[in-house]
Image (cartoon, rainbow, N blue to C red; front, side, top):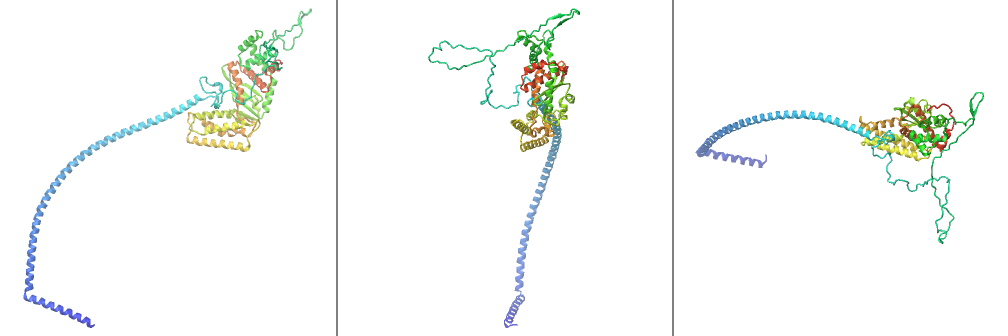
Length: 568
């Protein structure tokens, strides 16, 4: 241990000894006890005063507590009463709400039932409305059907309709000849008489005027029917042995007391069959135009069709050969009235020759025995399924397709394919018609047109899948299916320049017969109808060949009959 540490310890012990000594002295003298007693008494008095104060506070707190307990009980009682009143009010309110809820539920049930009934009624009305709309579309389509948008012939156009009878669009140009159109003056016949007009008086003496040596002429054409009647007179001889009468033979064809030669018969025949004048009107016209010199009876004129048919066999055979050797033939049926019953006329044409055949009905029975039955070329027609059994190839009439597309555009305005196809078909036909005869579009151009055709058909299929056709109007949908299923028969003309894109040729030939049908009203027999068909076709062939129809018809009537007349 170090010296510094010992000194500190000794000092601390000394201080403790001194403190203990003072403590012993205080205890032994009693001063410390007295001080402690005084201190304790002071603390006791202080504590007792504090206890009294606390007791007073406790008593006051007890009173306050009792008061609070009374107030609490009063409050609880008041709350209880208010709670009971609230519960009673809530109970009453709940009962009222329950009754109200029950009434509301009953009302809701009634409204739900009414709503269900309304929904059923609405569904019925919507179905009825849809049916009415479809029926309206159907009736509208029926009312709007004409030769522009359907296969109805133009001869069936209703008189009360105020529509322009064609499908051409207005160009805005004035009517009549357009600028640059060549002038076609009247053709003057060779003069049979020349009248020289005298110069006005005074012109010879007028020093201001002199002759140019030129002339100005104008021709006045007059017409009159001149009848030349040649009388053949032969002396009569009588046999002394038999008493029989004899005379010189008359020329061939002179057998009756009055015989009409080929020119008279041709004039009456053309008036009746070509000009569609009735038998009585043709007879009266000839009588009045000739001043009564040419008086042909109605029966005589009526029999000319049979006679012409019997004598025009060579012309019919030539037409048959032309039809059978042609690479393309147009075919169509048209209706005829025979004795008040419906019969058919089969029309065959190729642009150079026409043949018409009277038939009992359409179909294969109507084709049998005609050139079409043995034909091996391309047949152009109006989608008559009968014709698909004849010929090697087929071209459908796109003009009919245009009419059906126009009808689809009018009755299905929510679709777009019909307008696009209408524009495309017209463009194809226009291109084909703008090319020279025998010319056609190139392979690339034809392929592009076919691709566009297929593209529009794909659009049509998508549109009809999204908006199916109604049961009231299905013509547009049926046309789409027809154009899809018979695609090659609609587009054949693009690949073969010898094939025309429509069947308008037969349409024009049918009008020749229709005009005769309207004039005749009804034919008496199927044989008579055949005679008329032979005559119409023969005259049309003469005109197509550029021949003089009257001269040719007169020559035919001047022939002998080859065989008894057999109508086509």
